[in-house]
Structure formats: structure tokens, C-alpha cells
Length: 72
Image (cartoon, rainbow, N blue to C red):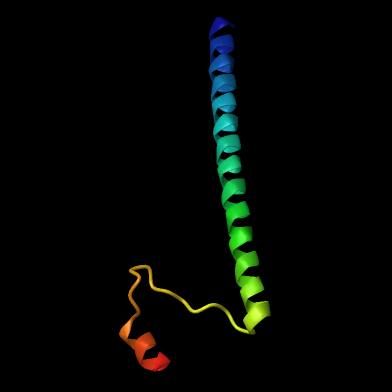
């Protein structure tokens, strides 16, 4: 009986730890979703003002040869 209680205690602790991890991940996901929603809203407002999506800028900050050729 004592072994059963020890096992149940370990299971309970594992469940508590898992729940805490899920809650932490949920909070992080909610923050990411909020940032994503803000980005989408910004893009949508650009589309409304100009009729098209904003120009894509490469991560490096330099335009790719194809985009330079198409813009001239």
C-alpha cells in the first residue's frame, strides 16, 4: 500500500510539472499570436492604403538581383 501511495505521489508530481509546462508554453504562444496579429494588422493596413502588399525586403538588407532588375 505504501508503494502505491509513493507511485501516486510521483504521478501527481509529474502531472503538476506537465501542467506547469503546458501553461508556460500556452503563455508564450499567446504572446507570439499577439505579435503575429499586430504584424497582420500592419500588413492589412498597408494593403488598404496602397492597394497592394508592402515590398518584401530581404533579411540581409540587400535587394536580390531579380528584384533590382524588376524595379528598374
